[in-house]
Image (cartoon, rainbow, N blue to C red; front, top):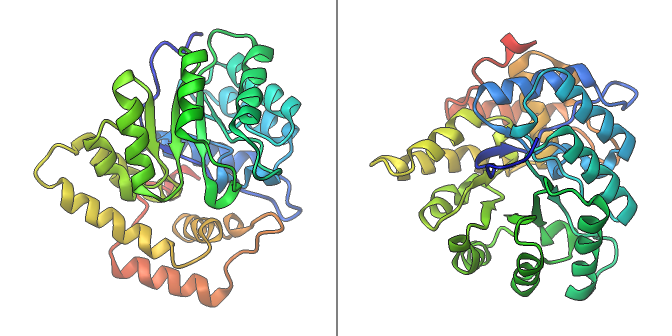
Length: 309
């Protein structure tokens, strides 16, 4: 199927559940993704908060196939396919296209630092050429606080010029609104899709031509984030943004991935969700209790989560 319509809205880099032996828990993963879809949130599975770089290529392939086999529309998916090894990126990207995914969210190869734009251009170009499928839609993934490898404005411009129907968007997880605004100002009017990497910038992004957001806390607060995406032109949009920021800032007090998993475990009544794969470590009992207390104080809830078990 061709990805004729660009994916928009709110997407979640879906947290990945693990069993006691650290194997991916496919059943819980599928159920979580179905709940997110029910909240009108798309799936950016195998993103940073999915512990993607702690997953093998084979594990990502199997999990993505499980979602499609479970009847989840691949048109709502933008899986992460960018790896340090070119061949791994090609395999994961080709697999996502074959399954009909709306796009591929693609990190730059991030192990080597200080690489020139020319090297990054060659990496993306080679992936596009080797996949060789007109259905491919790439969303660049700019997250320099983690990757330490930036996707610059000149690189974006060069990729769009060379592959205008393939390189169609970017997730900006720089945490720097000035950078997001620069990408929007330079490329949004051409149809290039820009997704801030936090709902804290959702309203500002939409007011400047953004396409939505791809946010860690969409794992736990999906409906409220989607509500602002839908109602951003309403009179209460700023108040909605403030409410989202309160939830975001609560989770930001803790290591994000363990905190997200602790919240899912608590509100689903399913302690197994708290497991992280090494080298990450789950929140301790004191941290979990404090997080729940802080969320309760702001009337936070995850409606429908227990029902999806």
